[in-house]
Amino acid sequence: MSDKTILLRTENLRKYFTIKSGFNTKYVQAVEDITIEIAKGETLGLVGESGCGKTTLGRTILRLYEPTKGKIYYDGQLIFDGDNIKNNPDMLPFRRKMQIIFQDPSASLDPRMTVGEIVAEALDIHGLYTQKNDRKERVAELLDMVGLNREHANRYPHEFSGGQQQRIGIARALAVEPEFIVCDEPISALDVSIQAQIVNMLEDMQDKLGLTYLFIAHDLSVVKHISDRIGVMYLGNMVELVESNELYRNPLHPYTKTLLSAVPVPDPEVNRKSQRIMLEGEIPSAIDPPSGCRFHTRCPYVMDICKKEAPVFKEVEDGHYVACHIVS
Ligand SMILES: Nc1ncnc2c1ncn2[C@@H]1O[C@H](COP(=O)(O)OP(=O)(O)OP(=O)(O)O)[C@@H](O)[C@H]1O
Ligand SMILES: [Mg+2]
Image: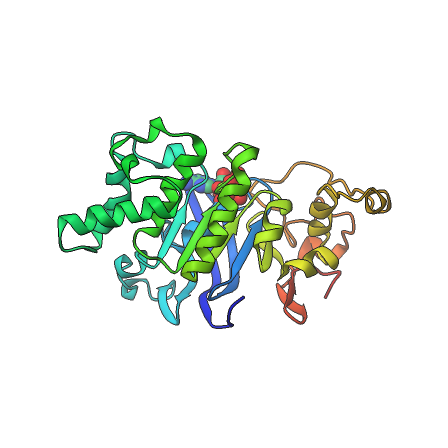
């Protein structure tokens, strides 16, 4: 982390999706009252099983999904206030500062647009050039930056490999000179052989441009190297958040312990000693989540109180946040 100025803060941020079937209305409780801060220049990793709400949290922070409740601050400015929805600011000026890189590059690039048009679209929206030639020059510069070449501007996305397509997605995100980028599993759709290249490039960009990342991944091995801190989500809740090395050294939430026990360890000595903890049962539905602690149906240490009361997400050690009745 380069400094401790808070760039992004959420307060009890909630996102429920409404689903209607016939006369019934149900709510998918995808993100449940999450309070987090991300410092300028930091990478906050975000992990958890499929469907736990990582993408929803990332998109809700950017207001690509309208939040259901709570507050979002960006660089000290309130950009969403659930108690005062009518006065929420226009997002256009913030869109320039906050960008997203998607999981599936091929699905996120319009197949009818050339690479040049894709990368320049945001320049057009935000009026970031005065002369046509500046626009062309800026696109060439962005393609250079992500390891493509300027001739690629005239081609279409399908002419590129997955890794190159993700480079196009990254060039598009960088076009508007953002400060904050949600990287939503940017490598999980790519060949293992090129994953490291993309991660390294994102790290280089961060160093060069002073970017702040929310870096979403399925499993801990991906976020370990890139993240300053890691947040662990379970069924819409943030269950643990702490500095990366500390999460590995001293995981406190039973769910984090199970996630860590599933990460392959290169050292066989360590492997033999660490017990692999298996979770029982399926992940419950976010439409009708368990009462009390949402993890209680699968927790090996479940107590009576866990079924009745949701544990508060709080700082139990310096900078170490956990939501668990056993720990607090
Ligand atoms: N547009 C939507 N409408 C209704 N429900 C949705 C919508 N998007 C996501 N959900 C639901 O919200 C919950 C969280 O989904 P989300 O995509 O945020 O999870 P995720 O952690 O990103 O999963 P993955 O690792 O598979 O990408 C899931 O139950 C999902 O089915
Ligand atoms: Mg997702």
